Image 1 (cartoon, rainbow, N blue to C red):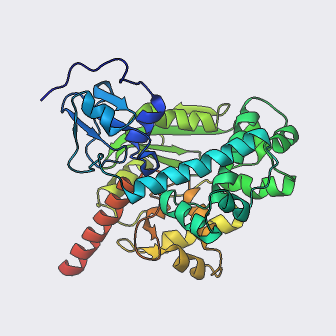
Image 2 (cartoon, rainbow, N blue to C red):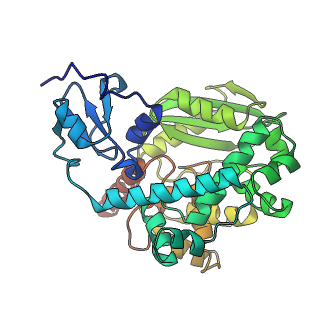
Length: 370
């Protein structure tokens, strides 16, 4: 069945909602549903079904509105039924909105976990677990990320580092520089110059996990991005280094790209490429440990923290994984939760799941053959 006529009152165009659908964000469940005109089916944003073409997507506020327009509920994600995940995601969205609103009105506000949880009638440890289950990070990490986003925005507009630092709510330069290397890859002053003076070559190619962008300097690989199309990958690179000398050079870094693609295909299990990545000493220790995890194996964040001699630094290990700019080469996809379930991944849980499953399959096949 094809639904070709939808009332204008029900139809909504929203780039933000489309991003939620493309990324299958569970946090968007309950806030809207989307329907596909070519199939006559409506789904939750997190539905695992194949992504439709954007010109065939119609957004509705709720299942009732979608059904009134003639669409039927998806049998996979069952969007007409309430789900604990959806309710939890809705609560996390409210908490995130409160954090955003608070920082917008007072960038220097200090939101403690106790105060935040009390506002929503939760115990602090329950709120933290809820955040980690839905977003894969803690409320504090979310708050720090929002501050860093504000800082980057101000620096890109040309504001002085000191002014931007205080406007974004960083109380001291030491606190800012402590986070800068991990989340910017450079000092704030260099970031403000947009990477001026840097020479970055990149190329984009097809891979088993979609499109892959590889960027490098003369010293080594600086970025490995995964995505569905070229433009967002190029845009992400340019946004980070707006004043760097960035040029497409397939021939110059071709060998490194081919090595990464062969690795993704399972043809080259052990990949050892030179890196040119700025990082804190702690991040380097974590990333070096990740490169020691055998192909086809995984470790928990707790095990990685113990391996580097910092058994209590589990959250810091998670942050180091999340800020890894050279995925695949530094295999952060091999780090999982203590119970073995997959945690967040910058390029999507589906890709992380595919990477782990393929490596385990090939490693198991190799053991049987030997």
